[in-house]
Image 1 (cartoon, rainbow, N blue to C red):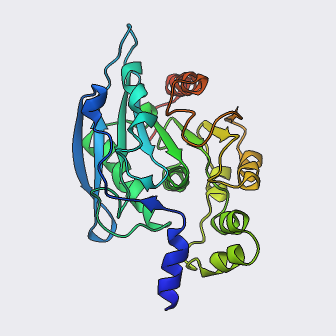
Image 2: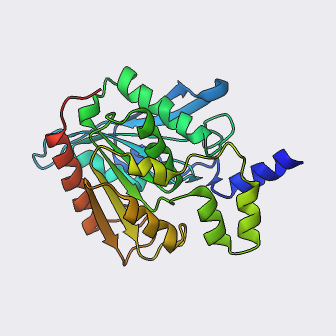
Length: 272
């Protein structure tokens, strides 16, 4: 019974499904689906999008994108499709129990899922760390931050949107006294590594986008993240934006993303 309740509490962080949404060809993109081994015998499904620079733009590098664990990667294609004509390859994927990926999605397991795709990028696609930018929204950003603990110099930069500071803090602040405290207590004891702890250790440039009209992460949780950002950071206060609108539509934040990522690539030393 305890395990069942633990599973329900942990599941509040995710709203994934297996429905079909956008196809990359609807955006005029060239891509290749892939599968890579995940944790505990699972299979992680992903998509490689080839950079198609337009208007004389140079080839920049590769963005590894981790979505916010709602629906699946097809739904989130608009978050990254605009990177392709700007000269970026893009790798996106579904964590376990999402889209075509198998296994069980958990807060700890999603870091192993990110590791599997990171290894695919490095080993199969030959992406060097100094040409790689990590981009994560919500729980996807959580996974990438904790991935960086394993590979501190494993990318040129990381860009985050609406990532909570702590898992139990998110539960309490999101659902309030009583229900929130119960949910926090029901999270498995193994969920002990919080995004904010990983953020404090980040060595590479980091940008944190704060959507002012977001309702997925409590304001105080994002405020705690802003306070914990290392010195080598940018804070993007997108106060008029909701979660997923800053990059899902043409906005000034796309330009900020491109500038930040290009500068990080230009400055990045050859690393692991």
